Length: 410
Image 1 (tube, rainbow, N blue to C red):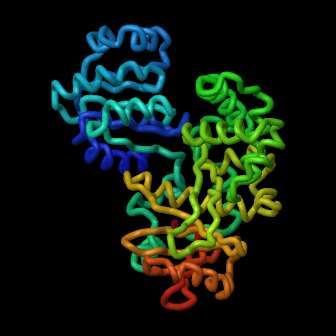
Image 2 (image 1 turned 180 degrees about the vertical axis):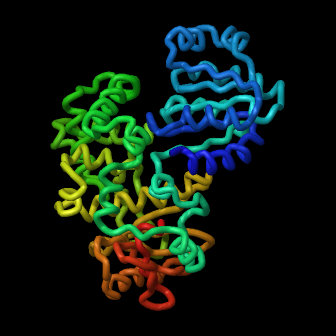
Image 3 (image 1 turned 60 degrees about the vertical axis):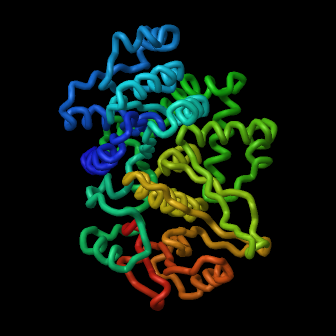
């Protein structure tokens, strides 16, 4: 089940390990440790592994980091390194003395304090990679290749290699999400898994960042945020639902962003397009978590429910981002909305061009959907190929500048 992720991560790590330190971040239970252990076997070095989940080892790392490295010497893999940022100054010293590529492999959640330590002490020495939940191509077993682009040759090749999924099949993927335990059916009950998942975050990570969190209010906050997925952030609405103030709502959203649970999509703007809005949109990396939090009981009810369009948009945007993260690249994605409420769901900036994308839960989208793409014609960057991502059963086109792309081809 990890085969495709291992291939892509192996190529990333081989490139990244020209650096002395490799840090793999991502939310809990997405397979960071499993991935690193596999790569350690492939690498063939006698690399030791130590986990800071072990409280005795963690105490040693925090209180006596110099002794820690006397016991655990490189090449070394340190799991859950966020628990002991005290190690970073000593890693820096050892890296500068040894000058050995790949001396330290680290895994951890992308917590504020840890990332500050990494950026301040290990700048120029560390390669950062992010591991999201499994993508649809990994789950289905499609070839791991290039990130998503609106290039006809790439999309045509993907169509030959893949089965185009119909709407119920896509929503089964949306409902299940990308957490390895659910994909492999190691844990058969989504409700049990996600309930435990949220409790684990509350006790291990969230409280470490904000001690005054009330568990019930935080769960209401999570549900309110999930109900607003694929929408502009409404801090007041979320705060009112959770019975907290707006400052707390903002802080908690930043916590979830730092933990790799959700991400914000910024609006596209420049000095020419002055009437654009400034509020980001909210998305979750794992669509299964959204379905759990918003209480959909099955893929069928999610597909027919009021949130179906928002769920599909969240899924599509997250899948596009994963195609970049899985090859170690940063996607430049935005959305467009102006003060007249005219909107483009997604804009991909690549190679000096803007590629506008609409995401629709329909099999035969009308040409008029592409009219909104004219809104970015005044941008300093040239407009590239546009597309409607939808439930079509094959790749098509409205004209030479606007494609019809099945969601399966992401």
